[in-house]
Length: 336
Image (cartoon, rainbow, N blue to C red; front, side, top):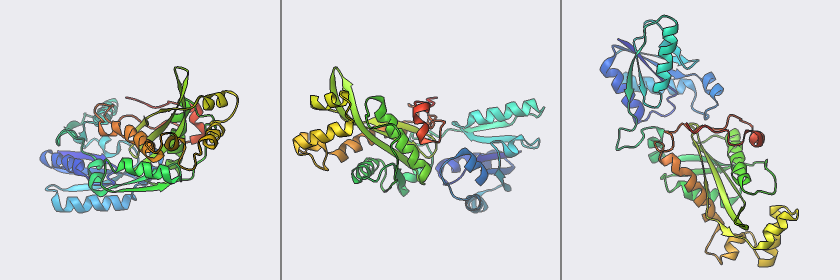
């Protein structure tokens, strides 16, 4: 039986090996479809390795380990050779099984027999999702942060070091797109804008945006920090830091027309706060800005650690690629 497997194959991880092993067990001939450079660009996934490099790596692996003949082809669309009449089966993961079902739907419309679908459970190793994340656990990650502030870079790095052994952070110059009076929803809205700008301007495994602002609860103003984390596979999440009560003057200042920055700067003058920020000064060093940033990013990474609970990694980036359209596209995120 002739069968196929498809994917980007940027990193050859344990999950891919499981797919190949299933193919070796059931196929007589294997066709491996690898996403073309053009298709990568259309899907706007991370800046992965060129097709030739990815194909060479797969060929090197199969030439040593495949017990059956094989062919490697470039995928210019999501279906490729899976729609060919001579194709009899396909190997997919539990997360991509819906794609195989769609292929069979199209084959049926064309009067072609459906493919036999072999599904590999990617949650089969110690209950942990097998993906490039396992590779990153040992090789480390590259993170683009939508800011050049040392405190945000340090806070982000410390957060990711809780999950990965090696972390490389790069600060990206970004523009504010939400406004100066960041209150309530504006906080995460601003963080999302910064994360999107970081993705637009850089390469990496994760893209992070952090913003701070004021949230009003029970008639009181609280300062807190919000973070958005975009994964290079489209998974996205957000988190908040601890909050602390601001002096009444800050909220009154904002309500009187002052920007949040102006109100906080006024607070700094009265407290002697400097580059350390109001949190550190008011708490006498018990709250540090870097730690609050770290808290927010760690909170945002919780869904990444529990994809089965939070929708198996199906949460996607907002449909807009323009960070300046965040106001219009706000919360346009799929929680499937």
